[in-house]
Image (cartoon, rainbow, N blue to C red; front, side, top):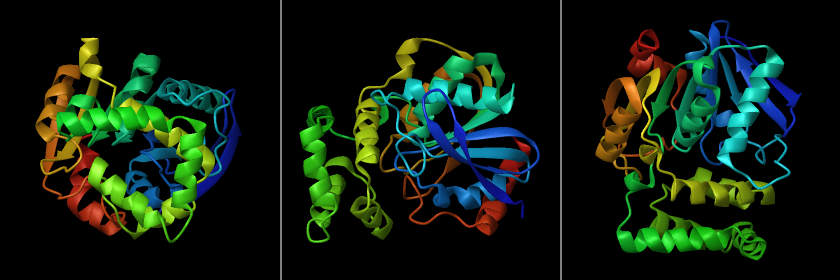
Length: 282
């Protein structure tokens, strides 16, 4: 396997903690919400068979310094640009999963022709694809706006960081947000930093308000789009329809997983056995 190395890089908006692996063309993986860098190591090793892979912790996560200003995905896109400029990378491939879909499109719109091709898996591209009833959706929008307040975040942290009450927060996330809960989520909530929670509240707001379909654009880059037809969080048909509108050249891969995100990261061996063919299609 290729060696994974870890680095810190000072950029205009943040100090970014990232890993690097492989020796091929540059590939930047954009993280999902509350992404721990260790959960992506197997995927990085798998993709490093073809690419030089870069994966970073979002500002406000892990060892990456939070933005001084309020979090916006547009700032992440600018950070990707600053990151590539400092490393001297002119052209690169781009990949995003889940919330990383929003980051992927934002980065693509900012950097244009510098992006070779992209991969999107179960991407958030429009609030229209979120699997909630109108009543629940409106309730979540109101709750999400309220959650950006400092007092609300402090209250959430008190609940999350208490072993006797954290299960109440998990129950709320499962009932209201259809969030897939497991022991990993519980451990994340018990130790979730204040800055990470702040970023998360703004990410949820973006998930519930973003709609790239309304841009009315056609993106020239090739796109490999993969998603489970049984995704419990995002509607597959709606997401596929919007992705086909966004990209002139798109290849669709359908899966049948009963989850949005695997309960445990796939092993390198599993990825090679079931998805190795995709490396030849990028």
